[in-house]
Image (cartoon, rainbow, N blue to C red; front, side):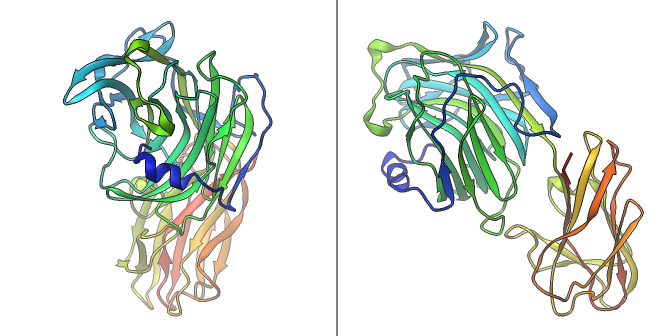
Length: 392
């Protein structure tokens, strides 16, 4: 979010083939995520009268035409209110603000309800990216950005959604809807905006109606663990500059909620919370299910080494369980996977790398169930990640 206006407008010229935009509109607010099987993980309805700093950091960077200030973000009337002002601060003539979750998230459904401001020159965004403390939007560790919405106040009827790949301070546009008409003035009333981020797609919703779908594969770039941002900065996008005569102005966020239904356990990073090994294992240079994802291998021709992935499921349900097969000529031709009393043998030397289904199971909430991989003693048994995909 917030690249130079020239680069951003160039990126929005054409719709990629991987993006579909729908035009249906409705005024009905969405009360829950689309589909079934979701568990609410994070919620703030901003009803306490003061920002909960155990949940949020303030956005305090300098970006485009404004300096962002913690003092510009308050709670009032059941909303997080960002007041944008014409004032000098740290070399800028305007100040904005925002909130960033202290907790990082990954795949799931993100939703907010908001009302933008009148008057040009302000860029409201509901987005995620790894940059947790609010002092910069360009953390060098950031890999993934999903823009649930970007609305420029010069025309509050217009919206866009994007996916960006980051490498330090540089980015690549993976997908964008371009600018389209909401069918209403986002500054006139509250409306609900949500996005469902999954392994191979992002779906965007307005007032509970699917507006756009963007597709990709995790092999295009690493999917990291971003933080959710609710923010407003002064920016001259699409020809709008802040008008001091229309300031101060307010942008209101009624709530933020995040739901989850699928669970990934990896051999590295935050998703390695349930990963363990016995026997002799080594780091591998072979990439896993996302770009640059490290994998492991058991000492070759050594039997009985185990790798275990144990998720903490938030809710009981029916889950299809997958293991990521790292296919290599010297891998294990008879790797054994056990889950919920069922054994599956996988030839890790055959075909291409990819997810292999281990079956569908009714599973309880909690961490009682796991996927256990055991080396056969033939070849080098390879381990990366598993996923539990909720089906009902």
